[in-house]
Length: 405
Ligand SMILES: Cc1cc2nc3c(=O)[nH]c(=O)nc-3n(C[C@H](O)[C@H](O)[C@H](O)COP(=O)(O)OP(=O)(O)OC[C@H]3O[C@@H](n4cnc5c(N)ncnc54)[C@H](O)[C@@H]3O)c2cc1C
Image 1 (cartoon, rainbow, N blue to C red):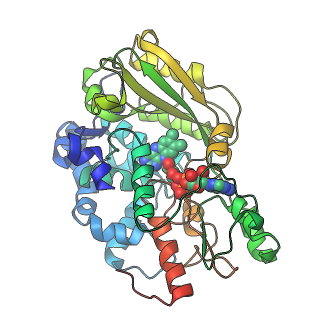
Image 2 (cartoon, rainbow, N blue to C red; image 1 turned 120 degrees about the horizontal axis):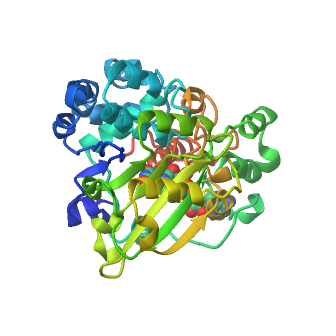
Image 3 (cartoon, helix red, strand yellow; image 1 turned 90 degrees about the vertical axis):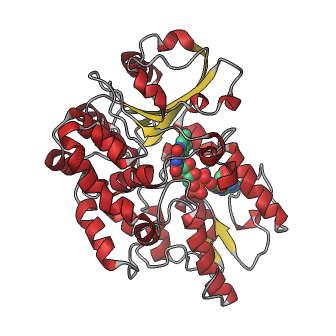
């Protein structure tokens, strides 16, 4: 995967994220101390919060990128993380920071959870996103995200595997006989695959699985780069557009119910760092915003009003735009039920019981069938860890392999 990654190949954007503010952008530098320098009186607090996590990130990630109901490998470290991560992101913002820049930077990270920022436990994912930005950066594949799927498929074929596309699995009859089946889909699809074989209690747990808000996405072709009012924003590949922390919090507080008038918009401007993705001089740019799960409402006007607010003249650069609705996302991948790209709610219970409370939630009651999608720990994201842990469980149960190199 690293070979396909822009990070070492083409040089990285120096700032993984930066929410534009009316006063100017708050920028998340790869370097922790460089970030702190720009945060004025909150610089020391930013370092105090992140430095211990960044320093021990490898050990910490070992414990948090797997099911939580397990004996931790690094209990003290996990406990320290837990103390900071159990509160809400809003509480951390209020108690740790006082500048609008630091609060907005923090809120922009926190809004990835698609939960109200006052939800207990939202500080945990905020910390993880921040520590990853400082420890390893937020890389993206050269040439586009398809490069990642191509690389994985090529490796599977190299090992003798076969990839079938264009086939929708709706039940057990759609699957070939196999000793082990790993289902990379939503709990709803797993229910269909298990059919009558699912015991009533397990069936009820999957039926009650809670999805989070969805997203609506806009892919733009632009005649030039986004004309950010603050030119510093052109140095960030990922840009959280939402304004001050209070605006971001207000938007995320209502997205489960309606499309906010001033939404939080998550954007990426990859062609600034990877010109291979667009014709010379032109740019790609995508933006998505959170919407109620399954909503068919059109968010384009409010999203573009936000973009114009922070990048006056944005509309004049748009050559074409494709809108992807929640229903289209779900059709693209049934994992994204109602447009939920996190594979289920990420509140405390959603993190603990994913989809059921178990140290090995990948295992289903049906022998040989495993769930390995983002509806299992550690949840959404391009990390591959759910598949990794599900494969380890299958290797142990079905092939007697305890330790896999
Ligand atoms: C626009 C967008 C931007 C994102 N940006 C980021 C980001 O920058 N960083 C990040 O870490 N994460 C990001 N994510 C989230 C990330 O993509 C998901 O959390 C992750 O892909 C979930 O992995 P998964 O294996 O559960 O599902 P998927 O990646 O969707 O894989 C499941 C696969 O199985 C197939 N499938 C499922 N059910 C069936 C069925 N019944 N029959 C046949 N095939 C089926 C699907 O078509 C799909 O190919 C983003 C998501 C979106 C939509």
